[in-house]
Length: 423
Image 1 (cartoon, one colour):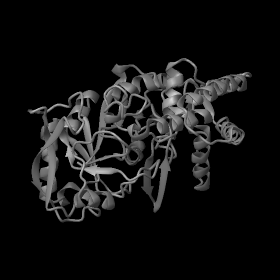
Image 2: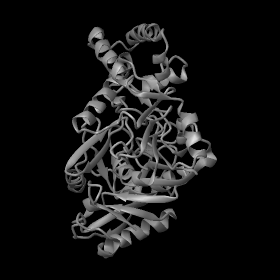
Image 3: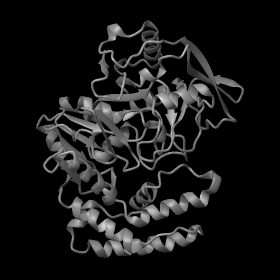
Image 4: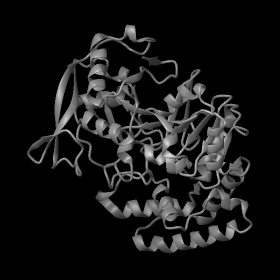
């Protein structure tokens, strides 16, 4: 058996959590492969809303195992809160949530370093979630990091103390005033560690490859979006991990030839949280309406998302980089009521028209060129099949399929798992 992969094709917040939840019934294992609590996967079903940050979105199904892979970074404090929220809803996770020993730990001082670094940048800040993600990945690549497996060793507290002392010295470099009580932070951290240690730690690469040999069906779950990839995103306004398809291999320890289907998720329009270039961003009433109707606020930070028309140049780039085999369009219902819809099909770049994503898409270099489409008035939220969709929506979908060369297999028409049309 092979591994299917699900990831976002824009700047995150595409609705990956909902689709993982919808698809989980078809899989034995859901495995998260990168990122950390800077992610926010929102799921709505049975009248309840759940927000996950680190735990895979298959946790609400009774049969599927959920693996937090080696490419993920874990904050024990936030992880504890996630688990307690599951406890409050009587969700049993003890036997079906497995943690890779090779996953790195976010320490309290990683969050302090994140805050100091962002504050020191002033107006040039990158829009960090301030969750300590960047500094943790820096320690990982600098070969200084702490991993989950270290918690099984007798000297893990010594390693923690040594790394923390190093971080405290690094804070002085930024010359900013960051107020903190380390004793209080460490008490909270240790409580998180105690909760984390109640779960099963595994050698995840061995576990997953054995599962493949045994014929188990695995869905790899990504976080953030392709345009936030550390290599292929809008650098430096990106996250600190590889959010694209290749990241699933290094983040889980599975070979490239084990990847079969690549599900790419995108919104019918475009959003972005934080700083960074956004060619199709709208600053008018249309953008405000998208944000209001779409409830566009970050699931992790609560920050309002910037909204704009669908950027097909960026979407085709993400499809290409990831080798997407199936597309899934989210929030088509949000566009109901607009007389005219626009899709960016090319850029005016340094005086020339181009159809690829260039090295720099800052506003001074890039101007979007749009194609226009007739909108639709129909309320999509109660629709359950393709036959009931308005003609102009079908035309919109057909155009995207033609331009990307990839079929759109799912159209989401609302936040609930039931509001999902399979084509």
